[in-house]
Image (cartoon, rainbow, N blue to C red; front, side):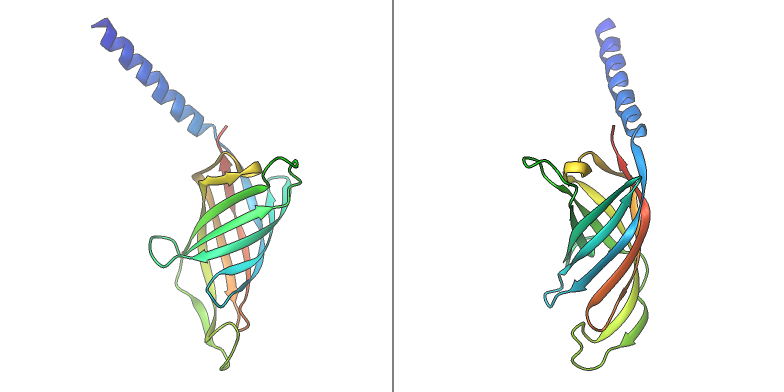
Length: 170
């Protein structure tokens, strides 16, 4: 009988420890601007200016459209954070989905590089911890979310602003 109680108590401590570490995640405000271009294949390429807490990052971004599943894009950023020569630069992929229907849709002139229409959009992005390297190691999808507002123009240019928070496990 004592053995069962001891195992139950140990499991309770382990579970409580897991909850405590989850609750002790540290979150930082995140904001910035993304400027990129849509490519003929649907991929997007560009740059990100990210302010995360008191730190500022200059990053590249690549967006891969997702034909199936809950996400519309997987956006991977890699940042120049002056990592050591034997370390990875800061990197993380965000799972991104449209948070509202497209708005301000306007027809583009025939032959426009960006396609048939321009539009405004709202997205939500959540980091994928399994993709994190460098300064993004330890990022958590719990509590981490970015809200993005953007505009896609007739030339395929995309300008986005984002705000939110990114959380890291202790």
